[in-house]
Length: 89
Ligand SMILES: [Zn+2]
View 1 (tube, rainbow, N blue to C red):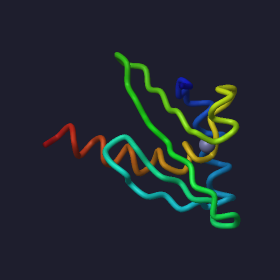
View 2: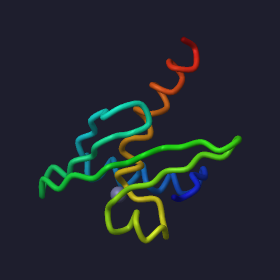
View 3: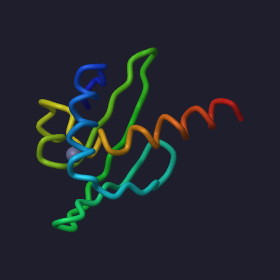
């Protein structure tokens, strides 16, 4: 689980814009991200503890927990929209 910061999410979303992976909602907070070139699928899960936001991904970079991967970067925009809708309901 990696804490999301303004800095690491900016890098992850920039990488996602280049690679343009496919994002699918599995359930609230859980997303399946598919690499369009290789067809490899990864699962991204977001969580919130207090005011801190975390993400985890089952890809190699994600499981090493060193940096926020682009799978997280690709799914966070969708997650923010869904999270805001869910809170308002
Ligand atoms: Zn990943």
